[in-house]
Amino acid sequence: MDSLITAAARALAAGDPLGALNRVALRDDPPALALRGIAMAQLGDLAKAKSLLKAAARGFGPREAVSRARCVVAEAEIALVSRDLTWPAKALQAARQTLDDHGDRLNAAHAGYLGIRRLLLIGRLDQAERMLAEIDPAPFPAALRASYELVVAGIEIRRLRTRTARAALLRARAAAIQSGISALTAEVESASLALEQPAARLVGRGEGRMLLLEDVESLLASSSFVVDGCRHVVRNARQNVSLARRPVLFSLVLALAQAWPGDVSRGDLILKAFRARRADESHRARLRVEVGRLRKMLRTMADVRATEQGFSLVPRNSRDVVVLARPVDEEHANVLALLTDGEAWSSSALALALGASQRTVQRTLDSLASTGKVRSLGRGRARRWVTPPVPGFTTTLLLPAPLPGD
Image (cartoon, rainbow, N blue to C red):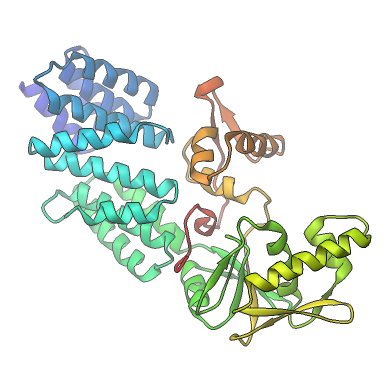
């Protein structure tokens, strides 16, 4: 490898894309194309970067498997940044194996981090943890150690383990400063905001207050009967029941929890659960059926008792009932939670992360766009959606991930 290629590679490793381009901008050999592609990616021109990397991969011969694998890893990183989550994960895994077989441990580890970050975005924490356990960051340079700790912190934040998340972020900050890459330091600072901003509202006994993530963690470990309006889960210290796929039952338990220790009239329950303007006998019959189903699902945690006016919630092993609500009242908060990471998402990537159909996500985006909460960039398959972050709030509890014990 000639001196200009070596110098350009070192400039990229130090976070200096302009310095790298000064050395290889006029060259079109495969190594130079690959470095130009990475430099353009660091400068934010992802389309040009992707084109250059594809050209570089085609230019490398059959004996240059490592170089082609590095191009695949770089393409995967661009796909991750541009939220193209449908990019073939198997190609990244094959490239990682090729790099590992040829002794390129650093780039193999980087490929592993990219795969883990993709799993984090779509909420597959168990798989991400298994992949992370296979990587030892000790022998790696500071930049890779910072990336490793960011992944650890991302998992711990999703799991609501704030103490270990803070420790990982402190290690990531130290490694990022040691690397001298300002963009990496900024990424660590951005990730740290999730622990310093309100994550949810606690509602109980007619009052409400904002909670940080560590407050949410403490609440979920307490003896309180918690109705989680962020992830549609009912839980106490011993167990939890997910009602994410039972919206009518969750509407009922939410209404009962908000009124606790009082009761809720049958008419109000019908209005909230079925959205019926007027309650007739068919609605009352359906209410009895749904209340029976709710009793069955919560039988070890609480009872739903009939009163003269309606129904009331009676927890079995808890002294109080609280509602964990979203920090902001927004119908499509789960979509906004993903968009507020500052990246441009495609509707297909949002659908994959949320486990919903692409058509459902498109309708949601159209609804949000009509109110000015999101905007689109590009057309057709290149269309992406962005929104500015909600100031002063973190959206961790709205991201696709299970709560502890789920």
